[in-house]
Image 1: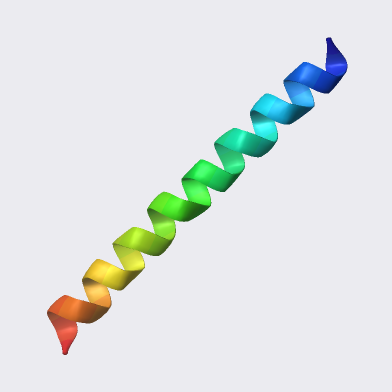
Image 2: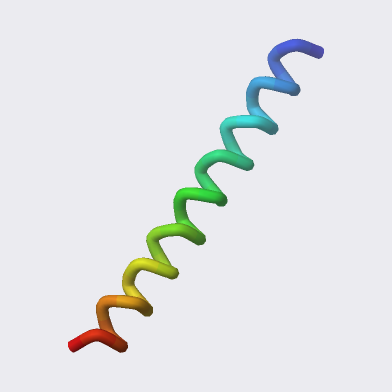
Length: 32
């Protein structure tokens, strides 16, 4: 069970980082 929880948290963190990267890219495009 602990392994499943770790995998879920890793997936969530990677998803959050992907969303953050997308937001940063959008901001860069709007700025320039």
